[in-house]
Image (cartoon, rainbow, N blue to C red; front, side, top):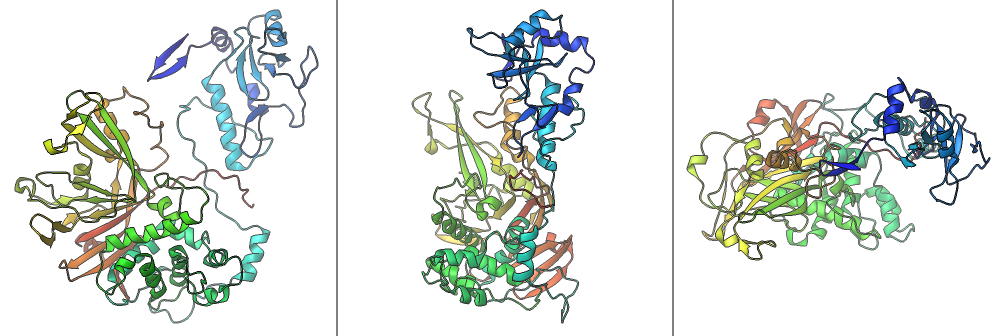
Length: 593
């Protein structure tokens, strides 16, 4: 018999296990030191000695269907689910006084009741097994690890893997010694107090839009760590594209980027790798990203000109170029929303949730869309949708602007207010009726957006450039937006919005996997702000970077240190936030000691 709790089936407790726990103060204490984890971080087993071969005490078999150890007397007995085969474990429980019914599967570390002839569950015992597996995966323990006595806890909580710094092994030490040299930190440095990697970018002719975005990406922590740890090596990538021959390898080493590529294949990731190497080399002289600009022109031929472009459009086009190149080299396509396809989506890809509810019957249609940034309106409009998220299938960066509501235009606009409007429920007009599958007719609906999954780095784009097709005019919105240096995104997550709508009556949420949002941090820190000054057709982009808790202004080739109040007063156009806490996943690769 079972009971239904939170839409899940929970088995009734075994009476023999309950009686066993009542008569024993520490029932599973003797088993803690016998738990063994099969490497690497695999299944738990029960062995007194790592090399022990357990055998049934009645028949002497060592490989029956199941081999059980009595928790009370540690007697080993075999058990088979087939009715024709005798169960020596059940015979042992029947011949002994009460308390010998509970046993442990020695190969699976699972509790079993010999009287009920069924598997049973105990929170403390399961917690001991989980802690043993976690300790083995994080400490690298193979066979014999002493497991501390566990405390009862919520087993549904995500287990975190302890961070361990990387250390090179002997082969990697040899590669470092022969293929690299120390960075010369001495010499003529005009700004020795500036952090490494802070380097100006030369304007190549109305390319401040590119320089501003590149400065933000060069100091995006996950992206910086990826390229500086040689996860994308431009020399190996070019050699692979050239048919694993010499094909321009020497030219690539001298010049970097894609100049030595015979096949003419453009790889923006290779140009980013060359740029990271140059910017973090220690040289303070302004760097000219000419090769990257040329490669981007070949990728986005419609934007190849010396005219001023939109920084947000360049940001989307650049990430698409990195994604497109990686996807061509993969045998199997990857989902962009999962963030597993390329480094661009691993860092910037999130998932938006859209709920459309029929106002007649209450039926809700839910869709999920990947996005790499979120575009927000500065001020609420009187009609239509105020939301637009940039997905891989929609790269438009400007929305339709209607008349503004003066009653809602008073006071100071804030980023939290924009996010609140982005995730609020709005009633769609009569011209946007939704076909309800339950009513089988078009009905008026209520639509609400929410953030299903936060990316590692969240980019918020403020729609300051408005283009109206009805009035055939364009303008720039110069209104000030207040933005925080620390941002809590939990009020805008799907889990929070659904709980506020339904309470705790639904679990999991309408097909969502449980606790999917717990593996990511909802608290963000601002590290880069791209600003735009001037008019729509004649303006200038500048980036403010936050490095070591100090702000720097990157104005093309000029880099200066500024006060944080100057950043707060800036006219923000794009803001980059990174998660305060990054969670690490366990890997099967052994870490060098």
